Image (tube, rainbow over all chains, first blue to last red; front, side, top):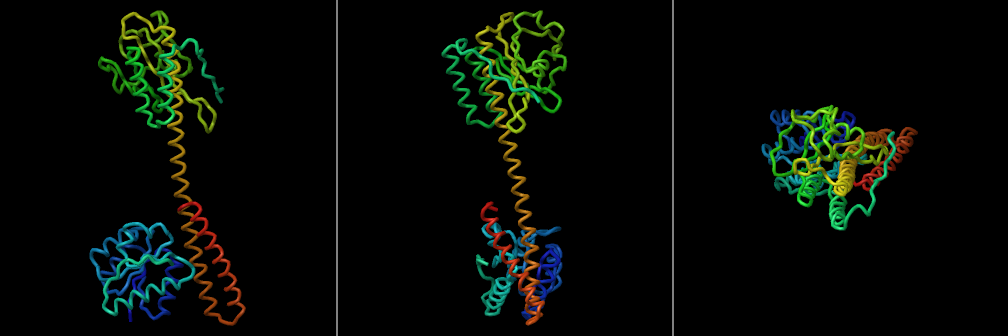
Length: 132
Length: 248
């Protein structure tokens, strides 16, 4: 079973994404901010990370920089309500960018694609600017 | 509220050469928003064209401090605030230019330094705040002829008054520009944060209502949850348009 690390500070959204991804058949571990995410990464192995950007304690940008240098092989999806991050250089460190929406199918589709790519042994994909 | 004054000058008192100078300064005022650069350039004009010694004091909180000093002599009062009992403070507070042609005119005032008050012209710098229409007094130009005992002529005094008006207007414009930029930045942040907060909530409400449609299939609850979801979708579209329109 693929294991996803979901990093999200908003409680209701954290619960929602957890439920939806578990129903898709993934094992989901939750973190409230970047610091908690890095602790999780030290303790366990993950197949994919879904990362929010604006968070307290440690934001998604700083977290992404650390993940990109220490956990290069784990694909990362930037999942945010701020569309402007899509075109920022930092976003190129991630494998995909998904804009938050009440329709979760774009997120689920991207998760599936990246995990399938990883399973096929393609390793990390280049950043795909999802139009979701 | 202070009444707005008109720039009181008579054109015939300003000779052609001075008019050209003033036009040049006015041109500078029209595009330059850098207060320091503008003041220095204007004082340079005074210094070079009239051979006068010129300096500028500006208000900083409750003090009046020297900002610009031109002429071939050492500045004796770097960082020293202007004395409250000086004629310079009086001019700044009253907003009326004075031309001290006789030493007795300085009686009753104190000099910031220990020496006596000298013959000079003191021109207030002021502007009308575009937001409040109030007159703001921001400082003064202090000019002397550079020749001991020789006062500034009426003609030069008229010229200096106009230069003072133009510098004041430029300071006003620079401060207004600064205020507008600050205000725009604050509003932009506020709009971005608000849009983000709305999106976060809509994502949660919409996501949960979609789940309820699935979990309570074929029930009244599912129908009502579906209606909630449709409303959220409409709001998300509206929010997207808002973000595009505001350029955030």
